[in-house]
Image 1 (tube, rainbow, N blue to C red):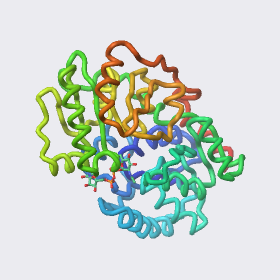
Image 2 (image 1 turned 180 degrees about the vertical axis):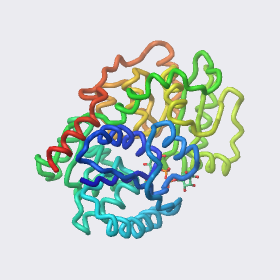
Image 3 (image 1 turned 120 degrees about the vertical axis):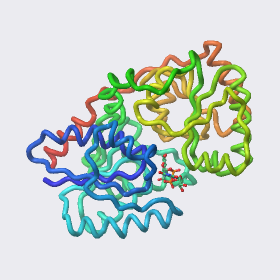
Image 4 (image 1 turned 90 degrees about the horizontal axis):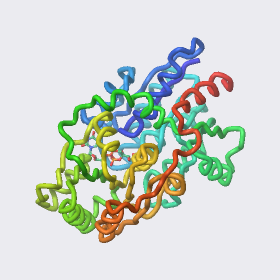
Amino acid sequence: MYCLHVVGARPNFMKAAPLIRALAPRPSIRQKVLHTGQHYDRPMSDVFFQELGIPHPDFNLAVGSGTHAQQTSCIMLRFEQIVVDEKPNLIIVYGDVNSTLAAALVCSKLHLPVAHVEAGLRSFDRTMPEEINRLLTDQMADLLFTPSEDADQNLLREGIPRERIHFVGNVMIDCLINLRPQIAEADSGVLPLKYALVTLHRPSNVDDSEMLRKILNALGEISGDLPVVFPCHPRTRHKISEIAFDPPEALRICEPQGYLQFLRLQEHAALVITDSGGIQEETTFLGVPCLTLRDTTERPITVTVGTNKLIGRRPERLHQEVRAVLAGERKAGRVPPLWDGCSADRIANCLCSVL
Ligand code: UD1
C-alpha cells in the first residue's frame, strides 16, 4: 500500500515524524513525503526535517506565502497533478493548517482516501482560519485519528460515523518522548536560571497593532520580574518592526528555535506564555505552567486536565497572572489519557488492519 504524507507548516512536522517512523518497518507499506512549502525558511522548516529525522521530501510544491485563497488554491493546483500521476492508496494529512485542508479537498474530489491525524479538535470560533480547516477536513476524511476523547464527541455531534473515528492519543507527544534524550543535549546557549518563555503568532494577537503593542508592553513589565525569552515567528517579527517597539534588555526577542532547542527552553521555563495550539499540549505533558493569550482553545483537555490557563486576549491581566504563578499558584496538571508515546503505533496498526 502506497501512503503519501502531506506536510506544509511547522506544526505538521512533529506529527508526521513519529508516524513515518512507525510505518517504516511495515513490509506492506510504501511511503512518500510531500511538502507543500507553506513554510519555507530554514528555521521554520528544514531544521525540523533534520532534527526529527524526516526523510527529504519526495515532492516540494514550493507554494510559499500569500493570502489564504492564494495559498490554498496554489497547493490544490500543484497537489492535484501529483496525486493524479502518483495514485497513492492513502493520503495522510496533519493538524489544521491551510495545507491540510487543500490536500484533503483535492483528494475528496478525486475519491482518494484521506486519513486525518489530530482530528476532531474544535475551538468553536469560526473566525480562526484553523477552525474552518479542521471542520472541513474532518467532513472529508475517511479515517479520523483523535488525540483526546472530547474530539471524538465533537466528531460524533457533527455526524461523522463512529467507525471512522479512532482515539489514538497525541502523536506530537510521541515525537517529544522519542527525542527527549537528545533534548538535554540541545545547545541553546546558557539559559538564565529562571525565565518566562513566550511565543505569539496568531493573527488575532499580532496583526492588530494596538493589541500587539499592549502585549509587548505587558511582556516588558514582566521582564522587570524575570527574564523573558521570546523566539519570534517571522509574521510576528514583521509586525513588531512595523510598530517600532524598543524592547527592554531583559525581553530577549530572538530567531525561531529548532525543535530540540525549543523543547529544552520549554522544559526549563518557569512558565510559558503563548497563543500556539501545540505548545499548550507540550507544556501540559512537561508539567510547565502555561498562560494562553486566547479566548478559546481547541485543546480543552490542557485546561481541564493539564497545566494550561486561558487568560483571554487580555494582556492587562498577564503581569498579575505571571506573578501568581511565580508566587506558587500553579495548577497540578496530569498527563491526559494515551499521551504515552505509542499513538503513532496505534495509527500504524489501524492503517494496516483497515486497509
Ligand atoms: C500557520 C498556520 C497556523 C500555525 C502556524 C505555525 C494556517 C492557516 N495557519 O500560520 O495554524 O499555527 O502556521 O507557525 O495554515 N513566513 C515566513 N517564512 C516562513 C513561513 C512564514 O517569512 O517560512 C511569514 C510570511 O510573511 C507569511 C507569514 O509568515 O506571510 C504567515 O505564514 P502562513 O503560513 O501564512 O501562516 P502562519 O502564521 O505561519
